[in-house]
Image (cartoon, rainbow, N blue to C red; front, side):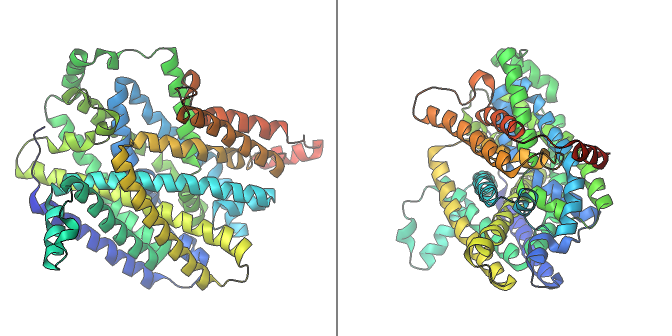
Length: 524
């Protein structure tokens, strides 16, 4: 493809952006008023409408959206326009349970999702199972972001980062250590390490408040970047109409109507993403961080429109990319956003638009990764270390342990990003690997907040059974016992969720008549 040489301006723009992130981390540290888990992990539950909306927006839309969803749209064609409904359903589910959960969080002082789970069901086994599943999902989620982060830096750098690092090593007399380094790999991993280091520094300084402050800047940049992409797509090479005509020539099957299995796959993904995304722990913690209930409601109401800017945009990128670069494999299609943007033509205006957009992609990635890492740290310290390891630990000690845990975990995930690069794992595969297990948490929130009859024993058995079903289907594919992770077009995690939800309801005893009447009165 014809690539647009972004020059050193791109790296300078990114460096300026990263310096701004560090500055916001310093500001957040200065604004901290106390040493407590609630202040560090929830910003003292003080976020107003603008901050809460932008931190929701920047966190929910990430490298998954602008790279992973676009790559999936490339592979599936016109039928993947339904992806917009996935994120809309996620917001609908959050809106349905968020007000109740917020009221409980203010009354009982929840810091983590597992705080609610233990308070509602009183089960240590269920709390541990929830923490394990959420930690698995979040670790995969961060890994997705690191892979997307590396690919974004590759495009912005075009080898310059490699040259800079290699010359630095040689200047220090360590040239032999980088003598055989591949340029693309070094751009990828060098970018990941630099961005992760900046993220860890500002998050360690200011916690959730630093994450929220940086999310404001990242959300604005993401909004502006998405607007730029829309302009670039509709103003070059005939836009959507021309793309459809080209696809009809090179891949007509990708604009055909879906068959019955295609429809089942759409419904399956709708359930998987709609309910899985709705119980992201960093999204749940933003519910806890709202200043008041009206602020939370207004923020979520505006969030309902954001899929039309972001998820729809990702589909358009993948669809137009399919018309211009047919025949790419799953790993290659993850970079379709970068291919489309860097091949738009020459000119100073186009160059700067592309720089802004690719930096916006990095901003979206960082805003999601830092939130996920903060949630992991909060669950480890609040739900494991302080409960089962050292109950007498002070808040200051817990915060030190949480930060150390985050740094060590991120080191492991950076190594995982390199392994993913070597194995050419697609972002969509990592998305499914995360959500098919994390979605098993949904009954505890969606059913638990609305039905008093649900018991901890039933939810634990349902969660374990749903996870086991998902594991069996995934394991069977890995062992070559069968070939599909989606029997009948339905994802393994959705099969597990059906089993999970069914057991939750079957194993929970019916309520006495008086309790049912109280439950109906509360619901109204």
